[in-house]
Length: 435
Length: 185
Image (cartoon, rainbow over all chains, first blue to last red; front, side):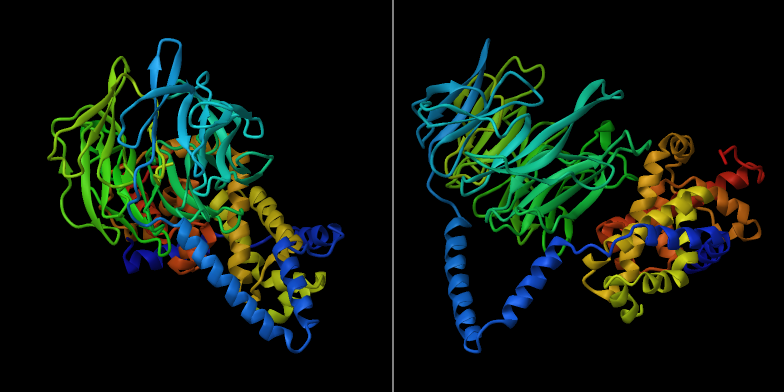
């Protein structure tokens, strides 16, 4: 940081360098204000507040007591409902759904809770269990945007969800009633990467009926939100990632990326963290909804070994904004996953593509990570709802082979390979937070 | 902030709004000029920000936050203007590739404000905005964070980064024998 004498010098310099407002600007502003020909606008929120205040003034004298009691009752019922929805610990495993890439399609397999008895129920990509036991998946024909489908877990009753069109990514709310999705509105050619990059908006719609509403286009001058949206466990908040729009902000440095959150009703959008370099492929809420875990570059002044372009694992306290780097230039790829009890984070190292399990307490690591030395290359990982297994998707470019394995969280037990072949997406376990 | 003036302006009193803005105009214009670095653009920026302020004034819940709110509108208007002018800005930003932390003393530039001017030109728009918010508008770090819509830690790191760039620029200037750098005007 700047020394006090430098600060003083810069302050004096800026004061001297800043020009005074020209006279025509003063006149121009007066004219512009008058030319608007309107009184200042009420914001929608203030308008509601004003109506509430007015109605409260009309209440009979005894009404406030009734209102207080009613409010307490509603609050108690609400807390009970939220408590029921908010799963803060392990729950029994439900069924498991995953894909296997086949020559002409991505086949969808559903398995019993012990991962046995696989049966094909359809074809598509990224199948996900929703709270009522049905499945949502996307078509497998496009890598950048596609349509969503809803079906029973046995594959019957498939129907398209046309109100979720051109979705670049989606996430179903914990109660299964809403879907947050990235609506593709444009694309541009990233010349440095030689590929098309979609420009998307964050939308929330009813799962079965639309049209829903646009929640965010992200911060100004950003391509946003480009990371799969993530619902908080209570379904009230959505986290997403944004990145500087290289068409608008030129820089020799890696683009700035930000983790932002927004209430599911569209209010209270804010930046939780911002740094250079990519945010990992997803953002993970801790089971208690207090922390977010994601990959990001440590500091643009500190080079990474071997020219790696990403990234350490960070955990940020959503309420306080206090951010902790929980890895030591370990380099994360794609995704971190919280254990159902919130006491471990599983992630994959970029350089070695190995599974790490980091013990956590209160948002901070309590010791070094355990590393699975025998399993590589690991692509992405997730936990079983009962917390007794870590699901590891194995494989990597050029994606000619892969596998799906169950690993004990201690990394000491024998691994269990449950499928051979390329798996296109992180599988979904019924009852899991990783939806 | 005069709460009474803000409340009157919120009620639609254009004269109250003018009275509110008048004593702030030089600072707002100065800040805009330092960020966008062109007098004509700064005029447009200030006008856009203040017309927005007038139009949306009733969205301001706390009259005491008027200054912070207007500063935020101003910074956003600066960014919008720079976006429109990005071709020009790209030429400037290509000169900012100074990555090594500088070890020189900005105070050495005291005899020549041109050196600091050239150092300022090497900052990105984001870095200029945070420098202007902190050292021209005199905002505390938390206020900078609110005005720039950034986390506090990002404001700190961006300030640190801007300082490094300026120190390195002063160093480079020294090495060049104080010859003016070829920077677009």
